[in-house]
Image (cartoon, rainbow over the protein chains, first blue to last red):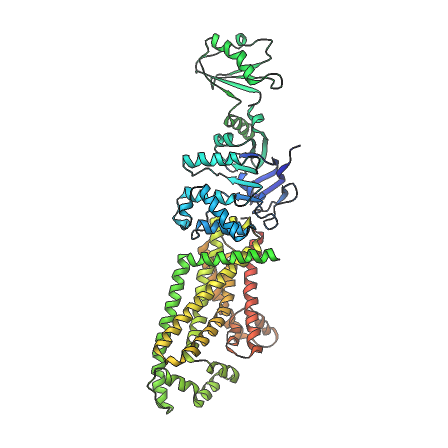
Length: 312
Length: 301
């Protein structure tokens, strides 16, 4: 059984008459990079705030490190957070600020300063280490906000919309950095950018109306393990009966709206390349105008299907 | 406990450094020092004029040194008897007359302006950080208690610096304008007065920082602190005016909540009067801070 880094257990949080979290119960596997996906107001930010101890739940609890709710004193530095819409102190200097946060979470002064320098280099802001925060651009401030999450050796990092506001080059660098962190620590990323989630995460939680509607490994949810999708030129309609063969045990489905032919197979019996080896020649022989082949559904399609059923 | 103290000290140091970098604090600090310097200068002019006139009336020996006449008046038995009759408290008058007049003037200035100074600077800090969300970065690394205490102590440090700088400014003006040999005596008097004013200001730092915990709007926090400052003055005035027997003794309790109660005791040299006053002011400052912390402790950030 996979160990959980964070477990929301029946968490309810109300703000006045609005229920932000409605008995949220879900686990984040330790060592995973987990995407938290949901529409605006679904409860993602509140879920983070409750986990980090900044917001008190009305009911339930969030267990971190498999033991108890997060305690900012006893667990200082073990769980870090990039909160949404939270500015850094305007008059501080990045190096001083990072060293202060490092010292606050228990690093000695020298190590805290060294960590600050390391992280400023990582986010390419060494040259602005002594500039007041108020003089930095939005993107630069965002990079410092991300940097503070990786001070010391946090075991759990909660990132709320980490890549928004960054330029494309920094997005690519940050993506590489996050992927590199896999299995070293647990990272939970809340984002509306499903493409980024798909590229970075190995686990995903769909949350709507304060509840987890589905969660699991991204491979399972998108069908990457047992689904191949063939993108064809729109207007062409394949003859499924001609493509199927009783020996294959392949389950073919055609989606005229997207122009995609999906092929589900038993991953334990057949490898994806074997499915391709069998199906592709038939498709090409039938004159199918093939554009691309990919493994599984897009996360966006999966999310839209779930969000649609959740809304209805 | 060690961790609490360490984290509180870290927040204090950071708060002090950040407050010094803030433009608002810098402007108010400069204005305060300028006010100290200008008021001291004007007071010396006034003292010299009064000194010359009173010297004639009391038939004191005239001196060519600036400030010498006022010092002579200050030390003359006739003036002493006059003040004792007016104040009605021999020991207090003795303590006051044992202080150089220019130091008393700086003290009056510090006691008058410092509450306003601290309220203007300290009132926004917590509200600003909670509103901007920057408090969250610290509060996932430390307890709310040590954060609040650190904020308070940082602001108390800033108030201390302002009072000290104001005192140094006033001392330099006094040194230039008055007899040079009075310099060391004036310096020690200024330092002691700065310490008294700082103890008095602590209550207002506690009040402003505490009220700043109640709201997410820095503007509202400042308004609340100014109202609080005014309310304490009114409460002190009312409790002095209406204190009496039976139920009116309740005004004594109200008076205990105001720093004005201890203002004069801070000028006394007798430890039996000074120390309880200082302890009461420190306790009052923490009481006001804790009033704010009680709100923050339960608050969602």
